[in-house]
Length: 105
Image (cartoon, rainbow, N blue to C red; front, side, top):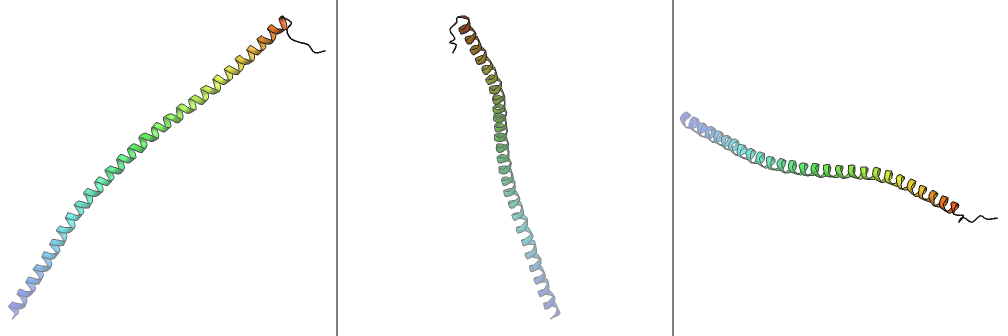
């Protein structure tokens, strides 16, 4: 009878050990699958980050060009205003020299 009990306990112990080994193998396989899926997701996110960074760099370049254009336009506007003022001044001088300016009495 002791032989039967020890044999039964050994069989139960083998079954428990087998179940634990099977669980470990299953969890290990699942871990590697999850790790692979995670790697794919991380690579996708990295690609998205790269694309966003490239777009941001392009937009920063456009902003820089826009700022430079604004400064250039201010400079050109000042020069044009000065030129228009000088032309008006010359026009009035020519009119005055030719006595074409009417003087109100």
